[in-house]
Amino acid sequence: MSTSARRPSVMRPPNLNAVTAPEAALPEDHALVMKVIPMPADANANGDIFGGWVMAQVDLAGSVLAARHAQGRMATVAVNQFIFKQPVRVGDILSLYAKMERIGRTSMTLNVGVYAERIRKQGRYIKVTEATLTYVAIDEEGRPRELPPAARD
Ligand SMILES: CC(C)(COP(=O)(O)OP(=O)(O)OC[C@H]1O[C@@H](n2cnc3c(N)ncnc32)[C@H](O)[C@@H]1OP(=O)(O)O)[C@@H](O)C(=O)NCCC(=O)NCCS
Image (cartoon, rainbow, N blue to C red; front, side, top):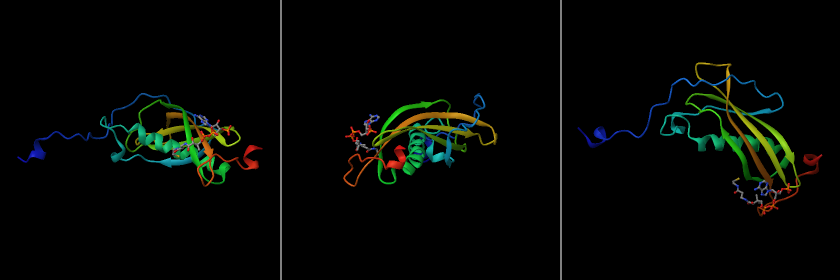
């Protein structure tokens, strides 16, 4: 027997156990900004999706809406709140919804909600994540710059 055959694998198979979670209504006051499907390579040691992967998707989703207002370079300055309400599973279809909450002089604060359709429950949405993030419009030197007037109207 080879050494690798005797060594226990650190990779777990995807977690397919049922999760009891309430069905959620999709938010009508948010815009659908992204859809994405997590892959086995995005899983953690439990077989669920690694929280850092989810955070990256949420950051991208918020930036989609923020970019419309910034009209140029911007950076994430803060993750004000981040709640993992339910585990994300390999093969879930994730829908990421964003809403502008506040537009300041150089910054924008957005709410992002993530809804999962489990692989065998298409059309039934579970809210898996809720977050609030702040982005700052920056100039070529990376300094805060005023948002274009239209963004602040
Ligand atoms: C974003 C950055 C340029 C802001 O610089 P700064 O010197 O902190 O800027 P200021 O203090 O002038 O604040 C700028 C705006 O951000 C807001 N802000 C700063 N820190 C904040 C925080 N912790 N939470 C919420 N808003 C914040 C300020 O209220 C201000 O908003 P306003 O102009 O709308 O009133 C700087 O912090 C930075 O480069 N951070 C690293 C960004 C990064 O690498 N992100 C990860 C990858 S995108």
